Length: 571
Image (tube, rainbow, N blue to C red; front, top):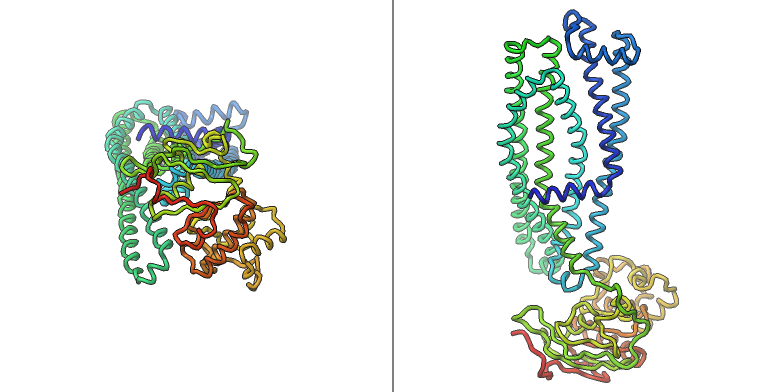
């Protein structure tokens, strides 16, 4: 916990040293102006006769008089009031500047951390992302970074509290070293009790972090299965589960609220006890001047709440530390699993002869091998069909071909180049992949098509739509500017697949991969897709994976994974 806290504070300082330093400097000057206006109050009361005749032995009086003499200003009630107003004005202006800088630091810290995490995640290897929970990624990028941002805001704001603390402490030492030491010794027991509360704050943060992820999971799970949940009338089940999680979340936050409230009570009562001790000792033992005694009591009554405020900032920071740990762990794990394209061979042209799987072996874990010494050669500009029951490794072959997964042994050759040695970005730019569950944005048909080629003109869009029998688009009231809804829900399954195929063709790929892209379609829509694919034969390399025999008819080559003896299947 201590090491993580140090790393967190270091990352904050490192993120924007100049602005943080500016904030600290402004805070120091702001503290001086606040302290100066505060010190002026007691001499003002003294000069006004409110505290009796002017007490020339008062240290506060002497200090103010010395400063006035140095500045060559006559020490009167009017000059004191003018300086007091000026100091308050300067303090207010400095406070405004500090607030602007602090907000900038907090927002930039959140933005940079979120951007860095997002960049690491989207550039990580597919195998790593495939094994991670979506809710874990969503929660850290969206929710936990916001928690960290609030903590950062408190930490930066505490700079002014630190300044006040040191001002009160130094003023107290100036007035009476002996009384300050006694007051400090009285605070020690409070700090010892506080340690346990701090540990509880961290544990509470761990529980809340887990609960936040559960909330994300519950919401996303329901949204993803919304139609099925409604059709099975499972709303009550989801609602009960959600209420259960939110109730536990409230309990976790209630625990932390109790810890924070306990700290306030501890220091409020402690402050009263310490002020009482100071009052008794100052009157009975030290015999302090009235003005200094008032100053000492005031400082003591302010010093402990200041310490309490700093402790609460520490507690909240400890409470959000699990959020920081979660974000940083995901960041580091993603960075360790980055796809590395540096120093890889560029792919300037598509293979001229073949794409070859040479003795490929792959397994997700030791107990479930998928492929073992699999070899097959795909001819360029031919249509190859891959057959096999579910779980036989068809999609795994595609992911290996795209470089999304790496074989444990063997090679994938592009003519004579090993796929592991080439730039995967170049290779993927030559391919178009259409999975069974095609993804469409909640945007217009035009925007969905332009996703792969933003510079495409109207003629190109119309051409690819005609290739896939997409004339239905032009019969829609808004044509290409029709919004398809979330995940294309406003279109039928066949229409979605035709838009997905048109988008793939707009990319002008050298290899087109259909991974069970028509399995959810009826025969009429499947035949439409088949006709579109038949028109592409000989123009590009086509790889077809499908359960239905319609798409396999007319393929130049067929590989049946069921008939390959060297392939191992999971039980």
